[in-house]
Every structure is written in structure tokens, then in C-alpha cells.
Amino acid sequence: MKARTAIFIDCENVPAKFWPEIEARAAALGAVNLCRLYGDFTEDRLTRWLNIARENCLQPVLQLGGKNAADIAITIAGMDLLHQGKTEAVVLVSSDQDLSPLAHRLRAAGIKVLGLGNANTPVALRKACSEFQELGIAAQDATATKAVAQPAAPKQQAPIPPAPKPVAVKAA
Image 1 (cartoon, one colour):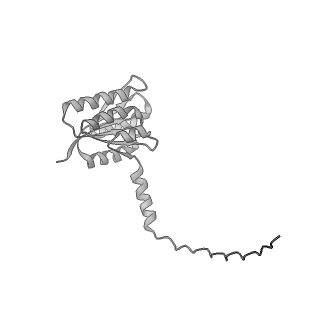
Image 2 (spheres, rainbow, N blue to C red):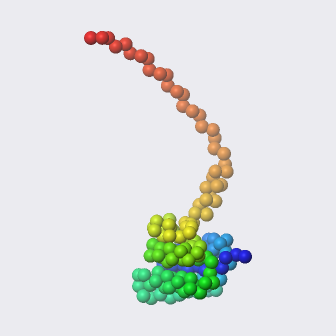
Image 3 (tube, one colour):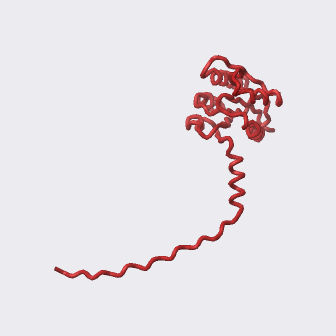
């Protein structure tokens, strides 16, 4: 039986273009039974996330409170899930170290925490998760694999220079 999995996305810190990758990685972890998107959706830059929510029946959670409002709301939701005892895995999608204490607490309770974020995600969040994966790496790996599949032309070694001739030293 696959692990019951919840996804919490900090839309203010992760671009919507990563949704297909987020969805695939979460599905590989377990059966997704909850997916919530957090952010101030009155901002135009988050419109694409709202479209994704409509197309995929995801639950957007509007946060108007300012800088850390989404982080606090995600933390509360994570603790609610912990106390319900119905989730074995959580996917935290953020590049914000403010979610590190939540990841620590969920792991301490035996919940697997998969962190997904950008390349600039602080070490604190990376280490707080059971596992952390950078978004966009899969596409880069596929390109790199194609490049590696083509054998490179053999390199010619440079000739070894002759050893220097010994110099006679006269005694004074």
C-alpha cells in the first residue's frame, strides 16, 4: 500500500512551471490525498498557480497577512495533519528555511518529509527534510544523459618532455 501523502506548496517561493514535476515526484512517494497551494493570490505573479489549481482540483489557500503568512499557514496545516494521524508522508514545496522547524517536527513523529525547492534553497531546509530534491534537475539530467550517451573522441596525450640533463657543479 502506498503512503498517504499530503502536498503543501509555498507558491510565493516556487514557480508554477514546476507543477508537473512536483506532481510526479509526489505520486512516486505515495497516494496523494491532499494538495494545498499557499500564497497571496491577489498578486498577478501567482495567476498561473490559480489556473493549475482549477485544472487539477487543488485547494488554494489565500494568505493576505504579509511576508510569512503562507509559511505560518503551512506550518499550522502540517501540525493539524500530524495530530490527525492519517498521513505517512508530506511533500513540502518551498525554498524558504522558515519551514525547517515543521520538517523537523514531522520527521520526529515518523512522517517522511520530501522537500522540493529551487537551487537556492538554504541548507537548513534541505537538512531538515528526510530527503530534498531540487526542482528542474530531472530535465537537466535528461539533457546531460543525452550528451553523455554520445562517445567522445579519444584524447591524444601530450608527449612527455625529455628529462633535463644534469649540470656539473664545480667545487669552490
